[in-house]
Image (tube, rainbow, N blue to C red; front, side):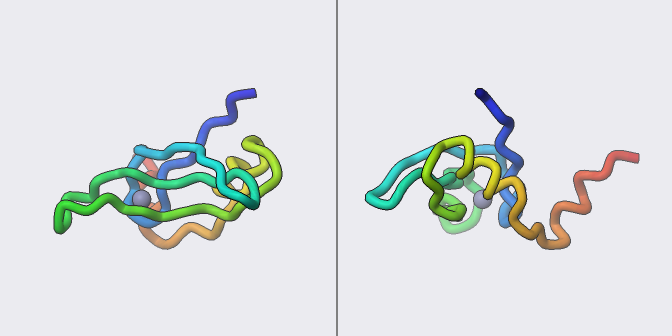
Length: 72
Ligand SMILES: [Zn+2]
């Protein structure tokens, strides 16, 4: 089970990782958008499994930024 994690809707980066806290799994963004030497830090919803966390991340509403993904 290795569903692709969609690129970050906030910074467009692909530096995403799966992590876990007391409540379950979540996807976090460690991409560096090149601003202020800080990583993006976006976090997806917490879910009961890694696969569900990835699915929730992939389905989250994407800002207009994602339109730049459309190739030709
Ligand atoms: Zn990001």
